[in-house]
Length: 437
Image: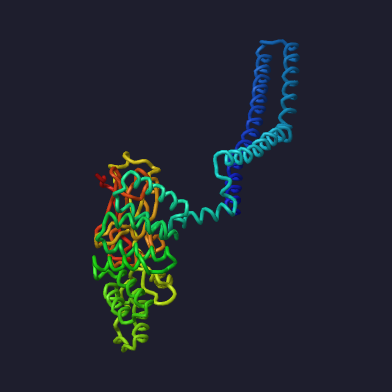
């Protein structure tokens, strides 16, 4: 704020000087020039009078009368000239200058209060602006609630939209509303009864909702997911936790070995599973696993690794996922679409798995008026703790103009997608150019 005030004051002083200096100089010069011209005319008239006397045009008496009149006028103009070069005009110019010097700052301040942003001068406003610039990194609670309302509205119109139910479920999950998340996952599974990933997510969420216990319905769902896909890593991780809590340590080792085989070696998930396997082996009296069974070279895997003790819903430590990857680039709108969208239309920038799943791993919201924009997606923008950007080596990055404001794709939206890119890429160039049917 101090810098702004000093700069504004300096600019105002320069503006005043630019106006006042020429004004005072011109008034002084104009006064002198005018009075000097009058004296020159009177001198010329006297010279003419003397020539007329010499030529006999006027009599001596007429000459004396006219000369006395000219001398009187010369004397009066000379007296007017002296103060003009001294005090009187300067005083008049000073009053004019003082008026302008006073009005200039008053007018400037008044215009700023009327047209500017005086609230931005406060330190609180500066902090708010700084937070707003960094606020794009994650959606605010109000934005999340708005999104939930939009998704629910869409689902009321189209209850068979499985992507909508999954978005709703994962949004509820990340906002720590497991009961509602479990209900949404149930609706999604009803539309895709053989999707092992969704069934495992439902089991995990239901376990959290019932006090972090996987007994009962969650255990049944785990077996259902394994029947649909015996290699589904989360179902195996949850099954291992159930077996461990039942003191069935060899079975826990078997399930966890399958889980570890289907995640990236060396990731926090793989390391957590390895520790669980080692503990289960010791309790079962089994020999230790061969050293080097898990390497540490791949990016982190998914977030729901088993916790043998104290957490029956199999969540990995939050710190294990802190070192996630990112993907970034630029988004612009195709010129041909510039007249077909509104500046206030929502723009969702997202990354989804390259293996075909349509569910976003990371999501950020902008508006058409912000385009073109440079973006970076990371794990802080995840829709669910169990599905993060850092879980995948390759992703597809996309951007979509949502005419309705909902993050769910709808007919009439405009979209642009990248080819699969490696996690860590920073030069992804997206052009929103395709209209969704």
